[in-house]
Image 1 (cartoon, rainbow, N blue to C red):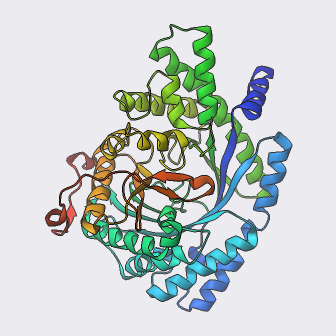
Image 2: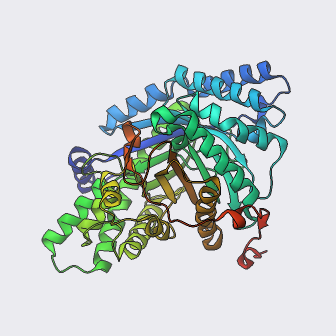
Length: 456
């Protein structure tokens, strides 16, 4: 039960501090839809997904209205198509993507994730067909999201797969050049992908998950910023240990709200409640920025010296607060630093306070990785693959999830702007260091798993 004090604090967060439930994601297992006949498979997909999701949007809206807390995005995550539809060709995979897009439109959701493959040790025929379908699939649909897990702490890094994916990303950018390569914004390349993450573009439903499950993504960078500012008004000499406690307590409150909403939606849908993912996921709106938290705690801008240490503190405090609030915290839970989706972070790139090298360093302590980063369109496939490999290496060595959602913007160079619209915002194209990585990447093979993977 919420106390009177908690209720009043939550009301303030909703009214003035941009608190919302960023996403409710309905996970649906589609393994029982598998068929060697494409039309039969598509019919089964339609029946299964619509059967579970037909009332998802209306129920989310009703529960949101009941508590006065907006559920911003309603999404679906399905079992990885690279596994379920392994017998199909590249062209048939594109047809499947279009079917999923049609289904998503019919039930009124924002995105559907699960056009996914798991290739950390190698690619099957089904994986290869799905990956080769990604450029056309993402550029010809509006709601389908793709993810590929190309590395893990147990398996290592599949460099052949990473190089292949770099070529695919370039193709996807070219096919959506008129929209600054926006197809790439719907694709993530992961190390150690979680099976229950509710945030796109990485969401899919893992093999060990239930038949149907509600996973909740709660966000609150504006709430955290205002809590910090209030604390500093009452205690101007507060040190960083004290501020970490403030963040932890705030994360606790936000997580409680997310679980309350998620459990009621799950109950009304008649499905299992899964996890709450408390990730500070910003929007392009003023006051809803992770970057502004850095300024509230004393840094001139995100990206200046001290940013990695501050982000580590922020991420840890968020996780501690969330884990105390709920026994079912999962997904990623921490702080996201998506460049285009955070007005303040994008301004730091524009002012050159934040470089690609510093951004990569910060991803070693945050929840995801190089997220919504726009780079020059003439970046070579080999350099792109090397950037991805660097990011995956951070995840593999540190036994954490990292990912890249990177957009080589066709026809544009560093310092220019890319415009994606909506929650995706706009991005200043970041400079990529010069120098060739070709001889390294083209060697291919599998970078072995680190020694600490031997834990049995």
